[in-house]
Image 1 (cartoon, one colour):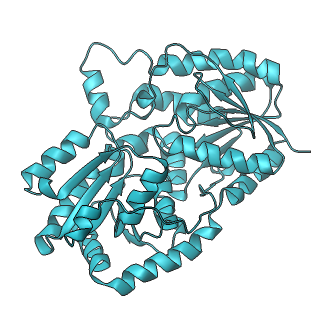
Image 2: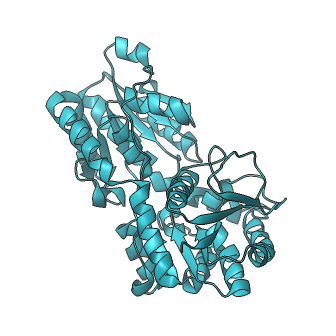
Image 3: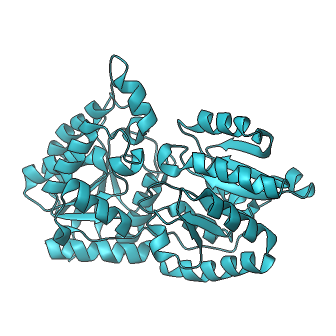
Length: 392
């Protein structure tokens, strides 16, 4: 008999600010195919049409936007020097927990499953009411988001209490497992690494983007993700300068949004290369796939990346990838170029090699595309289901 799972999340596509919502959706879809009944609780009502799980909305009025859950170190510094923190920041997470008690009483789950710090109080509350085991899924920690600089003490405390109360802790990579043990004192025995997956890929080819640059003979290097300290945007800009010193016929495309976008623009201007940067803003769906497919290489220079699902997205769109060694995806993706996030010389060298040598580019594309067939949400769901059964 498969378990009834009460799952607490913060977002689902298309109302998502990043990879968290996409990961929740992919995992839940695969779990439901395996017969798991999921009641997924969101803090705020949004217009979603999902038929493979039951949706419940906690209706937390204080939550007006998602970004405080992923605030970076630069923003924390601004908040700490102002009169108050944003009103919907921790308040929303704690009110979510109060609503969780009644929701848990009504649905009588076998397992409680919480995704990231803003849902841990809800998971702990549901566990206390039902006396059922709690799973804490860790997609990102405060140390990842801030690069270890200015971690918010309130968020850290909420994270730590949630992880201590959890019966099983599921980080999305081994790099993060070490952080959980060293920074949060989580018992190693209750940690199970569950790598993220990707939906079945197709060979669909989209209309090319950036065609004007292509016609002029430019190569395209892509940065895609939240533009925050965690993602290493400053290293991307500095590596770009070194690439352009050697080959001026390269365009650097930045897709995403975040509090370090102005910094990237300023830094590129200081280095005299702003005319070689294109900022597209946040993209999703077909537009995002078009950008991937138009790039000659995707670069993920993250300072601390628990997993890095964008690397799998790039591979699925037949794009070579260069990822930081400080990422979960670097642990499992063999046919990718890898570099320490801080090593901008090596980053630039590997970008240039991929742009120059067609054989290298084609090998990376073909071999990594074969490889990601092993990284499915179905496989991730099997690992999670095994944890459920052991807890029950």
